[in-house]
Length: 161
Image 1 (cartoon, one colour):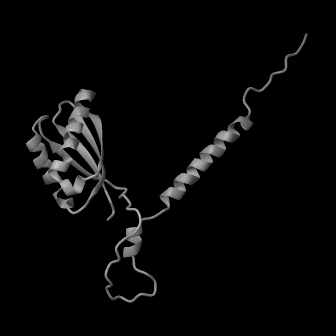
Image 2 (cartoon, helix red, strand yellow):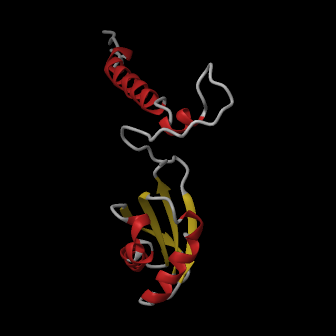
Image 3 (tube, one colour):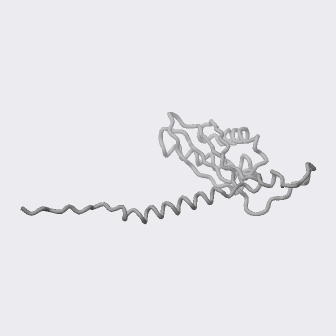
């Protein structure tokens, strides 16, 4: 009777390349997340300074984006453009001096196509509601399940300065 030898099909050596690639990805993400906020660093004060107020230096370099979005909601019938604009002005009034970097809009509807279309309609009216706030902002339309249309949730990410 001959005895068959079983060969291993799985070898840990095969995973070494994937492990190395994943490790590099994690290190890159940690390095990018550790950059800090230049505006907050400038506000924190410098060692060895007195308590006198100095004029705030104008930030230089690329602007950063706040990691935490401002979340607002509106409710207006699709096609009611004037009402959508009024509601956008109302929900963004507290942030009128800021500039948006990008906006994620989630249109509520049971049908994904109509929910995305409503989100697109809302995004098309952002610059009409607040031209200075949304000038050059990147927008994305999303669908969020719901029983009826006519409402949207917005996540607005503002620049730090």
